Length: 362
Image (tube, rainbow, N blue to C red):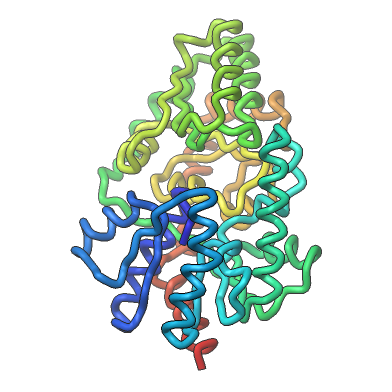
């Protein structure tokens, strides 16, 4: 795995957790020191787990030459990868497809400068080669499966969704009722990139101000795109939103979950995602969600969905106003959305993954 996203790291952790109970003849390579430390904290040191040192060119050299040498030396075992681009020059592999963004037109449009566009093109080509050569491709959603199948004929494929870890925090949620209609606590959780479309959220807040709706918004997520962060701060200042909007940057996962438990409503505005692990975490936390209308999100929120057209800040503001003034509807949405959590379980997902691996190994 070369994946560093929150969902990708959790998937790698759960995969390792399941795999270590099956065999001691595995080698695992991760590009994240954070994940390696996390594994060691929970399971102790494991000589089979190796940290891939090097990003960029050195990481590519490792992938193209060193990894291939290791595989050949070990009599060409089955390679399972969470990063499709890593498997593009090795045939005997299973791709757990973690990154659909390169196949998304919306992502290309909103990713910005030429440097990123070139990077997207390279990733797209590598992923297409990897998918075409793979023995089996595991997608995270039916939308990803159908979208990528339009561009390339996939081999045998399956859909195994992400899941969510259950956190044993205080589950008392009745306090939300008193806040609705007085001051609604809004939350956004996602790294700051252009395609996350935070401007649509901020513009909806201006609509709320004009309607005399009191609110607080916390935005949690790494400042990944400095230019976009600068633009957001400028908008906040120009529209006198400084007292109502907090840019918290990156925080610990536990703090994210605690903040969810103390918020009233999650706003999810990202124009495209491979899956959207934040939505699952909000559902597990019993935090109601208002999301833009994207096919992957509808696969996650099959019950109690509240969606607004992508980029439509007036529709988003209208939905927030409606919920803030109707506690009964607010609670109904929260409880209906929480029913979706039964569809996403790590034990079930990893059992499916392991069955695919053992069948393809034959």
